[in-house]
Amino acid sequence: MIQVHILKVQKMAFINYCYIVINTQSQTVLLIDPAWEPETITTSLINNGWLPKAVLLTHHHPDHVHLAPYFASRYNIPVYMGKAEIDYYSYSCPNLIPIISEDSLLIDTIHVLPIATPGHTYGGVSYLIGQNLFTGDTLFNEGCGMCQGKGADAYQMYKSLEKLKHSVAENTMIYPGHCYGLPIGQKLGNVLNYNIYLQFKDAESFVAYRMRKQQSGLFNFK
Ligand SMILES: [Fe+2]
Image 1: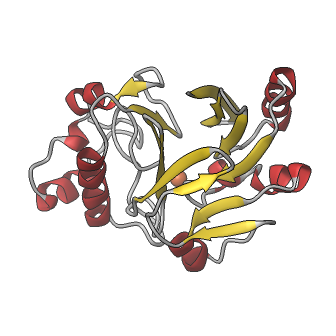
Image 2: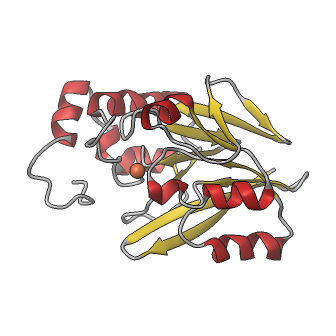
């Protein structure tokens, strides 16, 4: 059985969610987007007797990759990221393994399905592990990631959100990198009802809304 341990971590204004994924039978452990608080994450690992076998990164932004080099070196474990993301941004990290396809990866005893979800960045990847989807800054409960900056593209974001809607079941638990209202750990079915970014019928209207100038605040999604 796959269990998800949620960690809220912070550095000044940045509040992120990173995740420890555990196969409860084998005790295999993966880290997703570790950042900001090495002691919080390490203490949780040590207190539970967990030894991480890999780090999975959704995209290259500092608030998601901050502790990847630390954990790669501390435990001498591989760090996975989409190849397009690595190449486009020249990302480097010890033990970095590029993900080159959407074929399932078997990491120790945990099956990980990488789903390419560009839009927020050029080569972002979401990860489906059991019935849990880790979306980074692609899909939040309340909205979706920004589509400005190098390599970002609102049209690609629309396609990525459509892809997620159609490739995971409605009872899949959604675990984003940030939280702006609804508690972390919602089922996709709830998010589909709540999140207007999943309700557009065509790319053009999605792109116009996502890129609107009159958004009252970056994280005011409506
Ligand atoms: Fe980001």
